[in-house]
Figure 1 (spheres, helix red, strand yellow):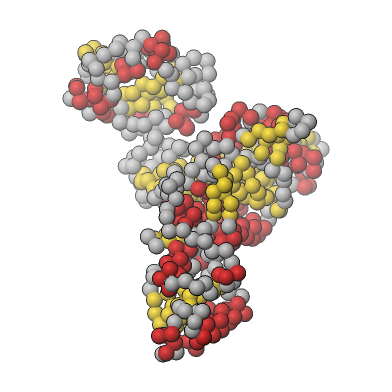
Figure 2: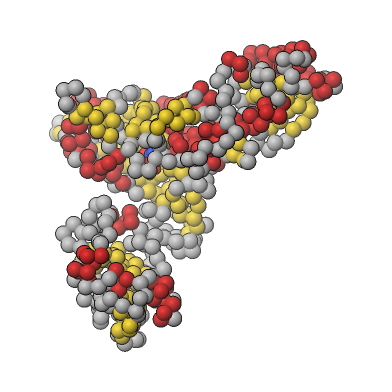
Length: 568
Ligand code: ATP
Ligand code: MG
């Protein structure tokens, strides 16, 4: 490709709404352009990267035995009524209607559509297991679309759905998909981690996420420093930090704590440690209000909380009036003694003794509180965020944290959808049976942004070579005026094309410095600078975008040198 025949439009300025580096660089390099909130056009340069990622995904999915298909993006509302998922997805669903006032959603995911396809298409155990996939545009009306294509409203997902007669068969395909995902992200060239995950609105019995490791990642990944355990913070099991509960040794005492609202205030006022206190949070429950109790220095994990049967979804903290009605005090003085609601305490809290909590009386706290003797609870659960330094829940090592970008999520769904939608087949005994199901999503557009988050420097993008829009750039200094430079550039260009290399030759009439900074920004892995001075010595300059090292190479060997670099 010659730049004169291509569309290359870079920008110097960083766009104002671009908070993270991948978003900034994608706009500056001209990979994407914004159309509206969470809506982006992929320019030819960006599309080349996207299609490379798609091709790697397609090859690995095919190799893993999955069958490509394509479902409509627009889905009839009735299908969603069958599974009752309209509420779960809530505001993320983009509702549309046709001229006859029939209701549709623009698909945020395709469990309903594939299950409808399969219930009509498959009727015998002999046709199973089977795994279908598509690469397609989704729409989710995200509350806060941001970070460019990292969290957009319209985006491309690869989604696969497998169907089985048994849990064992599902587990087999799940493992195959896990391996396929590992192969895909490795081939793309990114550092990543597979972690235990919460199943969210998709549901099912178990799931894992694939995270590209990057400081800007929205998710916290907890992992053992010496073992295999790794989980999204949302899911990471938090063990009790106290082995057994000691006997009460202090007397229950009410203390006046005027104006001391937060845990910090109270511990400073009383001269205590946060670890001696508990926080009582009142949330909406399914039947009655629920008190969730964590140690003063711990964070409530909202995903764990909302997954509790007694807690209403979505999670809602009670307001001041509701708190007053239940606890009889302000939010800062809620405590566990004589609190009239369903009380669920964290594992660590269950082993505390002589602790401090609110007195359910504004501006008063209790010290020397002990379970059984002074206060009762209904259940012990894992309620808190795990934190760095905690013992790993599998007993091996200590937890550390890294930031991650979720690029893939695989689920064992079981028969949630097949039951709801009556997707049954005849088993070997001729009896009708609901199918077991798995689903496997991967963010194709998000992967491009994740690749940049992990691979860039202050000058621009550094593409891993398998997904670079071009692998070699020829940058002639003075292409328009120096015939010698032009001939040398054209010769190398033709030779690389003949070898099937994806090469771009910059034949624009621009200043050398401008040209070089453009290609540093765009991040082409291998760059050859051709100028009169080096040609005097029959040489050209080679630059590697990754380490920015440059060396002069003899013109007669530059082709074989480049081919060596590309196959390295
Ligand atoms: P997140 O937690 O980031 O919102 P999710 O759990 O809603 O993601 P899934 O339903 O598991 O996402 O979708 C599968 C994949 O689709 C995700 O792993 C992610 O890579 C991608 N994806 C989801 N939402 C978006 C979005 N708004 N923009 C770009 N990619 C997305
Ligand atoms: Mg997810």
